[in-house]
Image 1 (cartoon, one colour):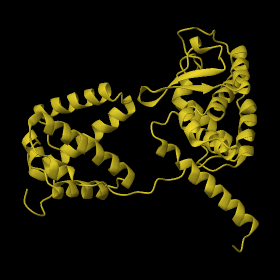
Image 2: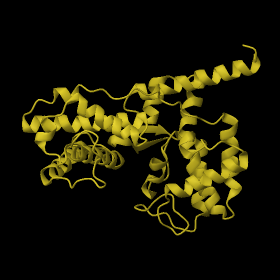
Image 3: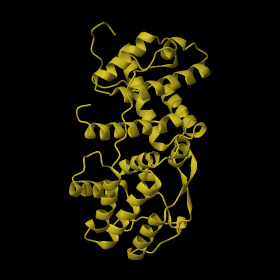
Image 4: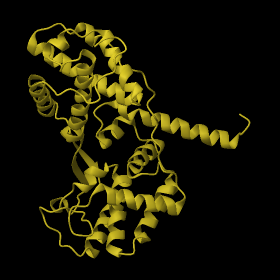
Length: 316
């Protein structure tokens, strides 16, 4: 493509050899690294964007030989194009990481030197701090959840789910994936989280009691192979229902839009750290693969202490 020429309005079709290679790479990521379905879909979108860019950049569908000839200039051009489309620095960093992994995988199989392309670096970005609720806000939210929905069993269900998120630090997907076979909850619950990693999570009596109340009121029988939490029509409860309930709760309490179901998991970790919990234990409870992921909560705690100090000493 000549300098200044515009890329085609629609991306060029993916060459069969690259389509097959992409499928095989995604399969290897799923199997060898136990990536989640969400991660695989994200990687697929990342690579399709990259291969589409190469097609427009060179005026022909990308081939293994195209990857073999990539330079840092090509990678920088791709990064610039993605930023120009409005992709955030964090999303671009993930996109470039997936792209480099695919190029490295292809170079191993086709025997070319990919060092020039792999030498490119992703953009730096500041990891945003989680925004937890204050302890009293979390308590008020759970109290309100027990009476917000006009249908008592649904109100009890919502409270039970939110109690698991705050009391046990579960992801919403983990809570909603529980089945009848998981009941009654023991002192510790085995959770299979991201990347297939299993962890043991202590179950507080308040969470057990909340689920028992929900099951007592639920019009649907508990089935061993069926979902523990059901929607209004009896099917497995979906995340939109809990997100909608959380939206009504935060409106009722005047909480910010950051008060989402996932914020309760952040609140669990932050409040545990503030109470003296150590990072390694919190890492295990949250199911983080790396301690660096958990360390973000030290920033939250420091930010909270600084806000308290400034409130008490406004001139500081």
